[in-house]
View 1 (tube, one colour):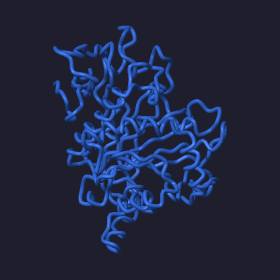
View 2: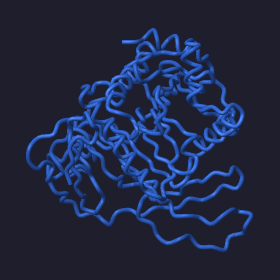
View 3: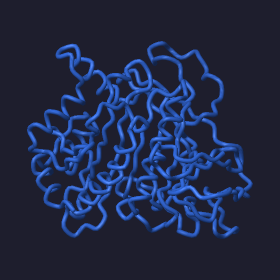
View 4: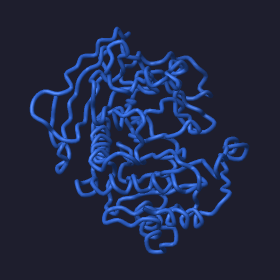
Length: 378
């Protein structure tokens, strides 16, 4: 399957193929070219695609926990010759991407936390005190590979490529949101072994959950209270307040504003939000997607420059999108970008108070974070 111009002003093309075990792989080309492309077959002898694990309810917190024991032996820091995200240029070393070259590639994770293939419902019979029955961990886990260059980084991608990445995020969000068993889609990127990255090739991920995750559930509840009290939209009103005060704003664009949240938890943290009310990446217009590609890279550059002498800071960048179900109107698209590097060579560890009690302590102030992020602007 091939389609051109998925985004109205995006000049690229999407080609969908199938891996040896039936998982989909999609190629997003920066620009459409005549004729068939990415026709190389997956020649590996793979077992059947992985089935989902299960989700179990924690009656002490009211949260669902995904149990995915098959991920224990997933690929961990392979050599470049064995990297599963590189293109397949040597038949002796086939990868997850069968073609010999690509711009952006997206495929279903071979070691997923959530999967569309599920076995029947879990066994009944547990005491009611332990909560509702376990459920299959139905969902989707995509790997989004940003470049065929193993040594590239997101900040180094050409503008045209970053625009293609945004298109891939939006397309996968739309596709997975259409699954009636998906409650929320989360697009994110991890960088750095300090974060727990197991593959150094530049990539991100997309998780489509069968439940609304805890942070989103908290946000929805706060938004509901705010609407009852004021009639307003919490995330929109927070953005307006930050823009009006200006003290923690670090970037103002035509369509997006970036600011350090007033109660930032991390030693480096910044939020990026669209000016227009949109639920998710798929709802962004072409001009918004084009600006997003630029400002996203600019924020990553600033995080890299935050600490003198640090070339590449570890970070997590996650797009919080509205739930797909009844509470969709209470969500609003925004990015949370943070680094746990508190000083060169020193990490913020989630020790007793944070990990044990969920009570956060920040060793700096949001205003200092904002000052520094403005100082290191391009």
